Image (cartoon, rainbow, N blue to C red; front, side, top):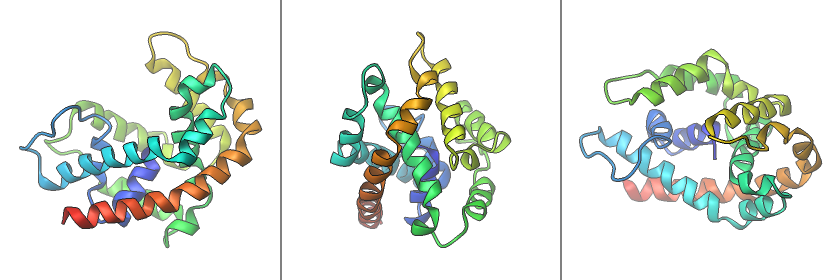
Length: 194
């Protein structure tokens, strides 16, 4: 899952929104000197990613992508699942999406525990209104194009716009079947962590 889903899941499980994003950057053993809420957020982020990667609906959607896109299917599906979360937001949260985004921005305030890449990410999320862009297919397409620059070699990500249109309905059905399972999993994990 991508940023919007991680923030949403952190909010509904009453865990740390910064910790949910810190999981993008924390590698290896979790630093025991971090505040407990950040440690929990990192752990939950990792559990969410593992659950997602192994879920039959996510796996099926990735496998349905043609070569050369299949190799980047995890990235594509994570972004598209964030898109569908934004599109179907009212099914999963009582607040309107703009209100939740504003709330998230207010909670994402750097402190001394944040690594520089997380500070940069949060600045970009706010400056470029990334979470709002996820609600539109052009916004997701642009985000995937930008991801190409993170790789040493060119990827097919800048060319996946037509693919997203072609597979849109199947991806949406995969998301709608998958996300309730993920919510249940996260609430169970968060409950057992307390």
